[in-house]
Length: 485
Image (cartoon, rainbow, N blue to C red; front, side, top):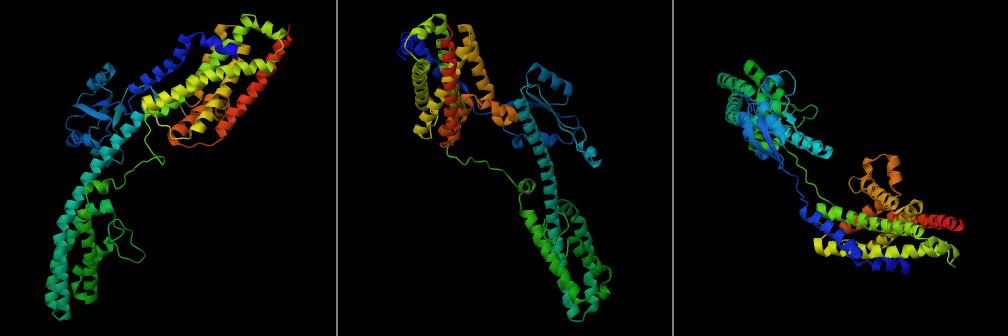
């Protein structure tokens, strides 16, 4: 152990690079990473004479904050040329005659063109485009609702007059004034026809299943159609109308009047878009991109330091002939492995602790979990990583091979250990294979402890178990090498 430590201590510049180098990488990463998505400059192709002209020019407020409309043009080719030249990010092509397409029973297409080849960025653009189309649909629906509300407002005086006339007709019937009642019901005939025509756009939006708009009538209860039918019956055959019919018509019209008043008083934007989602994390505090990636960067750097140094140390013993001294010295394979482990774990552990402190007090990355568990996780990570480092040194024939193997472990940890993508995106077999990498468990546990504050103990146990298995394997391999003379 003293031999391993002295080799590193004699190189102060190397020790400085080991600590300051990773932190400078983290510092540059954290200070220059933006949490918000970059804006997407968008050119809208609006065909000449398109009925969507006014709506398109007022739609910016409904779009995703990321999409910024920079201009309108009727020339699709010119817009695509801007996209090819890189002067715009998106081209949004609106349909020429959407109304005729819709009346034919087909959806009008809104085309979105981009040149991004990053699959994640392409997915984000597709979602943003879908949100933009939803905004167009909502604006169209809002226009329909506002029109229906206007018609409902025009109907209210007519319904009020119809109610007054029915009340007078009912009173005339009760007083035995049949002729006067017939004259009054003739006036209701004109109002009922106007009410039926005015209700058409309202029924198209809210349905006609119930008198209370949007509510389905219980079995046996009257609907809007029933109410309009009753009015037609009363006005078409007034001589056979009795007081009960007039009373029933008044009751139904009163309910309809209340519903239309309520419908007219609601904001059209709320009726078109009645629900909104509010997303919250159940754990306290906010997590920035720097906060999310920094713990995993620590894991990768610490793992790479110990794997690289330990594999080079094992190879160097072979190249310098130190292995021959081990064969004749009164020393066991256990002593050699343990000495190298302890020295490199001490060095890499100091680097890891220093980086955690610099992250916490230099970049402000939160540390919400138990420090005891964080140190225990760091120890398990170092133990398992030391096993991989020693093993790569045993199979490498030169310094160059040792460096290449260490780099392969680093690349595998980046792509398969959950640093870039979660393991859930890989096949089941690869998910199981990734459990061999210490960084797989280290990334998850460090993120959970530092950002969430809690974690389960399985990852720590797997790190220790992996390290123990590799420790035993390395002792066995070294014993065999020492036995060869």
